[in-house]
Structure formats: structure tokens, C-alpha cells
Image: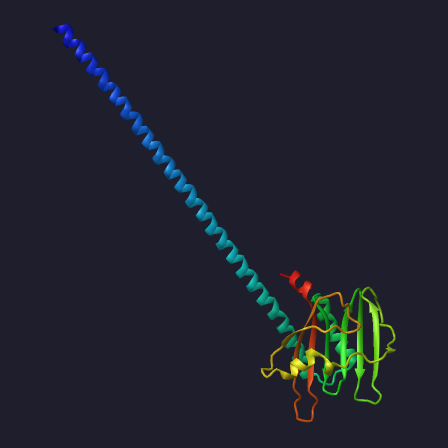
Length: 239
């Protein structure tokens, strides 16, 4: 009887041990499944977080570029307002004085390809950067016939400028879009327009016009329009 009891006790103990081991395996398996689920959820959240951070960084980059573009555009407007103020205060300046005033503007702002001023009589003064040369043209359409002269010199030239040469008058500024758009503006603010190329400007460049109407001090004074020709690619390179 004792032997039978010991045998039964041994079988019961083995059975209980087998059941315990089975539940241990099941428990470990459940923990592994839970751990894998948590890991997958963590990876998914990390991917979502990375996506959100990427979109946030992109939005900030776009906002930064937009702000820089606005500031760049305003800088051209400030330059124009400054030159317009000079033109109002010194309306009787000679061509030589205008050239001396404008040359540093083009030297300091490479994206400005030319600067000029014209009045309602068709008189026109224009300084241009053409490749590695400067070109200044003065046209008087108030006289009959119209007269025009030009001087062109290398940017590396030192010393006196070359003698001016008589040339055929170029495009009448009163027929250009930058002139007409400035006249139509009723807010006395600079106006941006897509450029119509002058015959002496490198037509391979994408240019924009920025122009501003300058009103005379009296009703008898001719109204004038000052303008910049701006190289779009060079402007964007400043960003």
C-alpha cells in the first residue's frame, strides 16, 4: 500500500510539473507577443514622429525661404526709393553726375542689370551692365531730330572714360511696359513687370522690371519714371 501511494504521489508530482512547465511556456510566449506588439507600435510611432518632424522641418524651410524672398524683394524697393528720392532732390543733375551716382549701385548689386530714368517727352538716361562692360546712353527726344550718344568701357578700365559716340536712338521708353505700368499705378509704389528686352541687353537673361513714377514738383514739370532691370537668376542666387 505504501508503495502504491508513493507511485501515485510521484505521478501526481510529474503531472503538476508538466502543467507548470506548460504554463511557463505559455506565459513566456504571451510576453514575447506583447513585447513584439509594443516594439511594432514603437516603431510605427517613431516613423510617424519622424514623418511629422520631416514635415515640420520642410514647413520651416519654406517659411524661411519665403521670408528671405520678401526681404530680398524689399531691398530692391528700398534701393529704388532711395534713387527716386535722389532724382527728386537733384532733378537738374547732368549725365556725368547721374553716371557717378548710379555706377556704385550696379557695382554693389550684381542682380541689377541696368538702371535708368525717362520722362514723358521720351528723354532717357540708361546705365547698363553688358557682359564685362559698362554702357551709358543718353537720349534726347525733346529735340528734332532726336539725338543719342553712348559711351561703353571695360569694367577693368582705369583712368578717364572714352569719348562718347553718337548712336541711333533705341526703343522709346514711353512704349515700354515698365513705363506704362508705372503711369497706371495709383499708389505711388514701385511696380514689378516682366521685362521686355532692350536691343542692347543680353536677351538670354530672364529679366524683370521694377519701375516707379516720379511726379514733378509743379504741373509744368515733366513726370519721370525710374526703373531697374533685374536679372532673375542672379537675384535668386542671393537667397
